[in-house]
Length: 265
Image 1 (tube, rainbow, N blue to C red):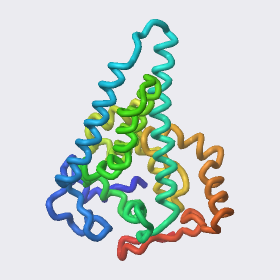
Image 2 (image 1 turned 180 degrees about the vertical axis):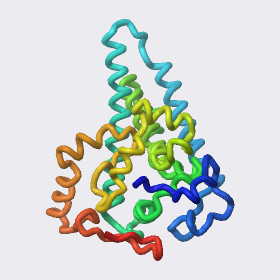
Image 3 (image 1 turned 120 degrees about the horizontal axis):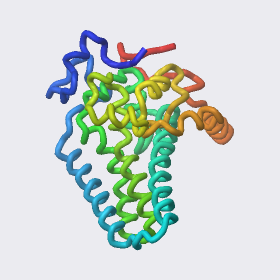
Image 4 (image 1 turned 180 degrees about the horizontal axis):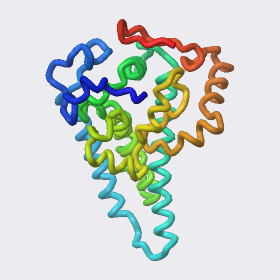
């Protein structure tokens, strides 16, 4: 079952930005949270975008001329590696937010709570404005983007950094598209999903089944099959448990208390 808004309520949400006051069905699960983009959200995303553009300009300046097939292949490999690294990184981060910590955890508490809320009302993400959805990963990528702009001169490292940081920043928007029906999704989202360049609805649906222990990667989703087949995340969980004796939520099925939104096994 695809975890979107029920059909009776979905029609009114087709390609529509959230209203000023969210309904009880679509309201955020965190106190004080909003679904609309604010001026600070837009400024943060604009700053990150400017750094991406600056990185692109630097690549154009420092890149030596392409004189062989090897040059083409190595640069394409750097781009591909950056893209898949973003997918892998999104999975590791998603796994950590889903399984450890609480709303009181320093720095990441609100994000942990938001990830848990997403499991209870996964359709709410489709009502988040773009800058609202992306400003937190943008904050995380800005220092790295600045570092690449100021400190790195190797064209392959720059290409890797530009692609990986861009897709890490956009991961939540790709994730959001996976929660739209094909009919309701933006046309470009459908094109990217159909081309296998953005995580598909079907692939991400597998994550939204208790105990939420597979298919964590939300950029392309390419890494999910490999990581799940080799038991990568269960191995990490066993390692964490050996170190600090903390069980992940995928073991305990513990859920946050969101009142009438709570879903238990």
